[in-house]
Image 1 (cartoon, rainbow, N blue to C red):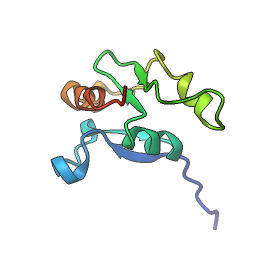
Image 2 (tube, helix red, strand yellow):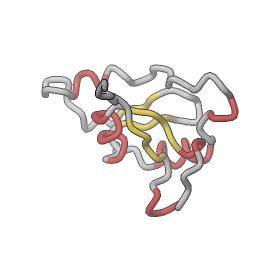
Image 3 (cartoon, rainbow, N blue to C red):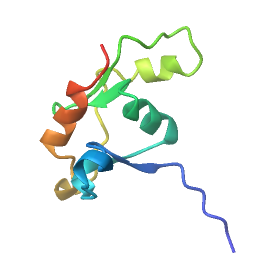
Image 4 (cartoon, one colour):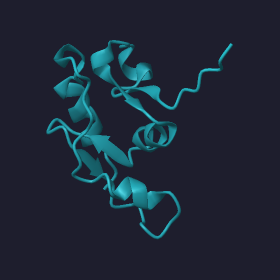
Length: 99
């Protein structure tokens, strides 16, 4: 028996508490750190399919420099277009990014 190591989590774009939507297009596969940062509105995938980052992050602080470097980077999309995040869900995240 081989133990399975999972390094990604399913992250809702519009939270379950608001949307009750478990459709894959309302989500992204993220590592725990990025999932946490997105849920706290410190990073956001946008309808332009790039990451935006809150100006509240400080590159001098441990763990925040890597998040800051995401700014403007393309989000990694699933290979099948039918599973790409919905534009309205990406917009929901962009609108809530902390400035």
